[in-house]
Amino acid sequence: MAEAADEAGVSPLPREQTIEWFRDAKFGMFIHWGVYALLGKGEWIRTVGEIPRSEYAKLQRRFNPTKFDPDAWADFAENAGMKYMVFTTKHLDGFCMFDANNTDWKVTNAPYGRDVLAETTQAFEARGIRVGFYYCVWDCHHDDYLPQLDWEETDRPDERRDLRKYVDYMRDHTKQLLTDYRPAPFVMWWDAGWHNKPETVDAAGTNAMVRRLKPDILINDRQFTEEDLVTPEQRIPPTGLLDEHGNPVLWEACITMTSHWWGYDKHETVYKTSEFLIRMLVDIVSKGGNLLLNVGPKPDGTIQKEFRDRLAAIGKWMDKYSTAIHGTSASPFNLLPFYGRVTTKGDRLYVHVFEWPGDLVARLPNLQNQIVSACLLVPPGKRHHPLGFARNGSDWVITLPERAPDKAASVLVVELDGPPRVDPFVIRPNTKGVIRLPALYGALDGPHGQRIRYESCDGLIHAGNWIRPGDGIEWHFETNQAGLYRVKLEHVVESGQ
Ligand code: GLC
Image (cartoon, rainbow, N blue to C red; front, side, top):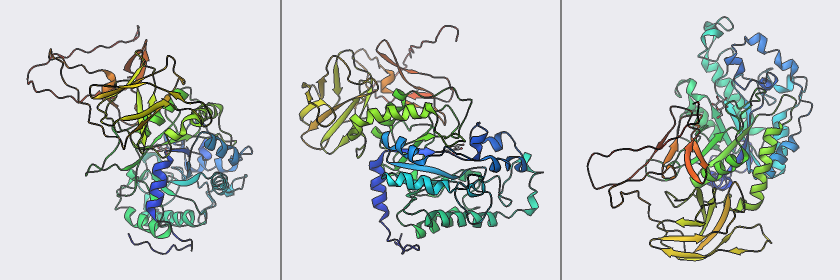
């Protein structure tokens, strides 16, 4: 695309620079906040609860988050090691969390009266955290949005609607969002584009406009045109994401700490543990992706303790180990024989060990390089702890100390004689023709809301929490012996299940 002159007069950065920065950033905060927080039942409550528009509209008069403190939010993100933030400027209920020029259905018309988008953006940017804007294309408040849902019919008659007018309305928002809040946004994070065909809302036209207005911007894939950023939701692609030529694509998994909703849910009882979240971040980064981790602030503007505690725990881990996250690349290993992940930077491997192996070795399969040194990653200024290493066939084995320095993930730094060269690890039958498929050698996957995950029991790593039928585990192996194989599966369920 030609780098058109920026219409707001700021000299444009090359988009490649934003892409590179984003690849290195790895970790961001998603913020879902709107008037729906008042009801405390998630961000879809207008639709899920089939609340008539006139009824829902009353929430505007009640939105008065007197404890809103964007500096505190930005501190939580910064201390967690997050490098960017994406804010919901307008969700499904159409309520604008910014001072939109073309509607009264906006935060500045609520009793609170302040442009929370502007204030949040400033607070985060003041700490060097770049800000992106989420925008929901589906709008169940606007008179001209189509299609409407069956139950909405009496609320808004169809014949008065003209989707083109809605597209103009949405483009006015987009222009304002791309102009009034600079240097934000670094990403235009569309959502719910699936509700219409991209042609119906001229998604390509909208995105072309976005690029004209802000040539350095990234655009996500949720209006179903081919753009910069692929956004798997509530799942981790088991082997990362590649394009049709086998090149890594820019991707970001967005994930909640809760079991389901993104907006504040006062009934939620299930939260992912800090340990799980730390491992999830490492896992995603080792697969070449970013993690956009969500918080849904409360109606009073505070962030609940469950989120704060987890962010703080991640931050504590990041204080020690963020060099093994930021600016790293994906693992060169397709499989590892211990429960952990690898990230790389130049000639260096960062070996993240999740469960301390009983045999006290970390085996790096088919690593062709020479190892120059190996040690535990310690914070700057702390004494180095060198580790022994030895060749073993085509593998290297690193000797670990008796105890894991960190419960969630301990990190080893392995210096190589050059950029890592690794042959794929292939599962083959043993001399008796038996093919062993440990859970660790499988790829766990599931649709939206994936539940299956690695767990350990007495040192044995298994695929647990398998509570959704769509989730699964997949192995790839090679055998040169055609024949009938007997499959033996070891599984355990808790008594009573
Ligand atoms: C899902 C939710 C939506 C949320 C989005 C974030 O699509 O339905 O409310 O904003 O995830 O990716």
